[in-house]
Image (tube, rainbow, N blue to C red; front, side, top):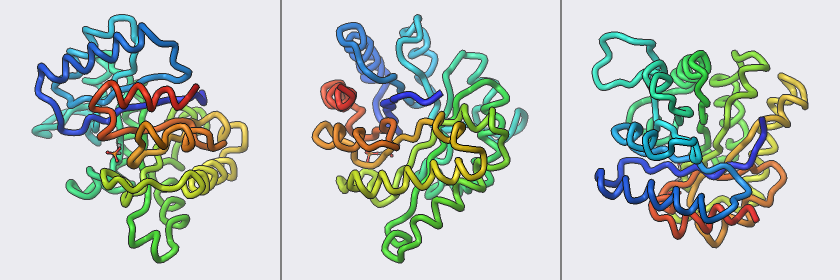
Length: 252
Ligand code: 13P
């Protein structure tokens, strides 16, 4: 179901004490405010159980930053969808550009992971987006089309409705350079129209598409006000509750 979401991707940051503090501060924030969006976090996997213990009433959605493309077995270092499900974790980020860049992940891997996640009742946050070179050569629409088709278009209509998409242009991640609201809206509308062509408008209108890439307190509101942008996947600014809270308040 389409909803407004602000999700924090903590990446490989924070020791256990710092992580616990931030989780606690976020819980306090949620108790003292009435946000107009869902609040999700993706801490390092080591801390997922701690989040689960703290957020007893599911006040905040808890996501892994990645999960295995395999069901189970001899895959050292991996975490399976079934393991996440057994901890009652909300879902997993899949296909983040840092996984693609440093770990060779492709959209075919994403496709397998998304299916496994859905089979376990988890919510996948599927990330895509073009590189700077691809944008400069005018290929961004084509790149995102291809990514979306390969990763998602083997799903049924019922399945794709359960996926959250995050458009994260690689050139905007951690660089301080943000896609303009118009640039982001163009791609979000493009992704939604691709889904509408394949699955029908009703299905496309039911899917949340988040923007990620240097979202900060001072640009969140304008980005979130675009018609096809349903929230954000936040990196650096999710690491402190003051900034993350202001971004959440972008939905006022
Ligand atoms: P930044 O907000 O630090 O640019 O990171 C975005 C991101 O990669 C979220 O997944």
